[in-house]
Amino acid sequence: MNFQGVEHSVLGQRSIRTASMADREFARVSAYNEIPIVLVPQSPTFASLALNVPSGPFVLYQRWHKDMGQLSPGVIWFWPFWNRISHIVTRATITYNAPARDCPTADNVMVNVDLSLTFRIGPDADAARNFVYRLGAHRFDELLSAETEEAIRGLVYSVTHDKVNDLREEFALGMLSTLNSKVNIYGVQITNVKITDVQLPRELQLRLERTTAFKTKMGEQEKSHENRVRVLEDEATKELETIRKSNARKIQQIVAEQKRYEIERREMEEKAKGEARVQEVTAMTRADVALKKAKGEEVVEKVRARQNAEALLKGTQVKSQTMKIEADRKANVMIKNSEAALKVSESNAAAMIAKAEAEAEGAEALAEKRRYELEWARLKVLERIAGKGRKFITGDKGEAILNDLVPQAQV
Image (cartoon, rainbow, N blue to C red; front, side, top):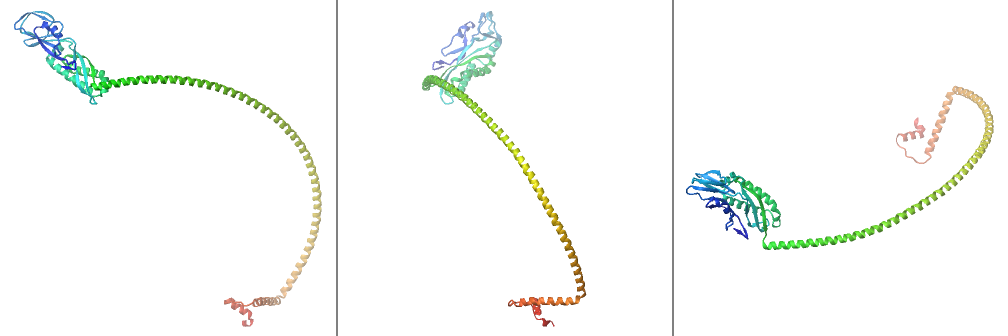
């Protein structure tokens, strides 16, 4: 089968006339790209006088159609008809092409994928016997074709069209292990699997090529832009360096002026400190003079105060002595007066005692006199009450007052 110039390999089994034709037949590929991997020579009708066993492939023989194993290479004399070479299996490494067409991707783009794998049957006669009797060339071809087709379509469908080429190596490793796990039991060893080509639809391929060209142009533009940016950065760096040097010089000038100002400030501070010391010494001198003057004036004032105190003390002593003498004199006078008053009081007391004794003797006459005086005083009070206008008095008190105003009513 031909897929756009790529032949799909076909594995097959051929019949040959004699075993000596094996090497030539293994090297011949048919018009249908059939690759022979097993040859079956014709059995002699009667015995053969000589049998040439080829040395390259595995040569299996039977006796009475029972497998007897491998024949050693060389010439065998007298080969009877009950013995027959059943299969000749190639030892060569076979390249198997399995193109897959119109495989849909995840974004439904049809992709053509060409796959190539290499295998060999072996490594020993037991593996060849296992392959011939358990699988065979035709079924092995069907197995490889189905497995490769399924694996390719599964790979392509798992990705989008722009990522198909990125999975070649990953797919090859996974496909190699998968196929070996399925065919090793039949005596076949897959040695290599690779994707030789991936073809997108023509229109899409042209668009991708234009996209690639545009990306290339964009890359060139980016490089040109980066180069321009680098040139501008270099120029900016130079200008920045110039500005930094200018600023460094200005900073040096400012630092020098600052140092000069600091020196002048220190000189001014020292001058101010010297003047302050002079003023301080002058003030201290004046303070000492004023202090000594104040101490002298204090001594003078203390002397004056002591003199005034002594004079005041003497005057006070004289005055107190005078007052004491006057007080003694007045005390003596008061004593004399008190003694005279005492004698007068004693005389008065004696008179009162005498009077009391006389009154006691005339008590009855005196009581009548006192009742008369009291009654007279009461009447004067009632007279004043009656002489101050009309008054309204009721009750017991009014009755009592009327009784008092009319003495005859009491009889």
